[in-house]
Amino acid sequence: MADVFDGISVFLAIAEARSFRLAAEGLGVTRSAVSQALQRLEDRMGVALIQRTTRSVRLTEAGELFYGLVKPPTRQVLDAVQAVREVQSKPAGLLKVAVSSIAERFISGPMLAAFMEKYPDITLDITITDEEFDIVGAGFDAGVRLGEVIEQDMIAVSVSEDQRQCAVASPAYVARFGKPLHPRELVEHRCIGWRPRIDAAPYRWEFTENDRDFDVSVDPALTTNEMGMMTRMARAGAGITFGMWETFEPYFATRELVPLLEDYCPSFPGFYLYYPKRDRQPLKLRVLVDHVRSAGRT
Image: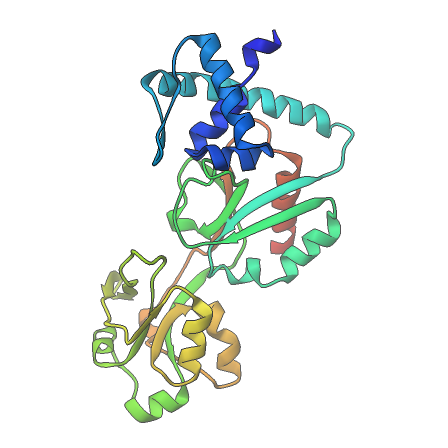
């Protein structure tokens, strides 16, 4: 009976990672062990499941069919094994979470520090990223991003109050160049823009007027993928930048930054911890969800 299941977990890891190296790292074994396990599975089945070249790894037609059929029951078996293990266990293991760079409250420290103190046997692996991708396929347990971009088949738990975007500049910049009175006037100012990745166009700044949304394509004098640099450059008087009110709020109190165009920046639903729907969630994830909910009530 053991032979029937031998290699299936390896096949699933390769199919989801599209990489022998990443599959081996995720399973904690060598690439050679992964290759050998897949070969044994293919030999038993008498058909190639994975087509591997020097440049890519993809599923064959048989592999696509097998993946679709075997993944759901395998997940159920893994969940059952995990459930039995958790009957008399405490929360432990590696918990991988992909978090938006602007989810300030979640990554600022206190919430996660309190979680680590409460559950010392859980190891957190937090990846800060603004790319949108399948967290399950990439091997993450959960993610944190704005609610409006979360897939409908996910469970979402709020980790912040409603959010607001705003344009900001230093008092020195305003004294020298003045304030834009309407978002359209931003094209006449020096702006500090943001892009999520190197191959993406700069983010178009979004506003609302008379209950209608519109965006402005500024021509940034400086573009970066890092909010900290945007904030530092704005504080230094380099131009106007745009982001979450929560990110800039500490610098309003010190008068290093002033908000602009507030009438065009209404609030909207904030950040959510999201994770896939399953009959039974791993204990390590359940306690994180409970912790987030508890923090939201304090």
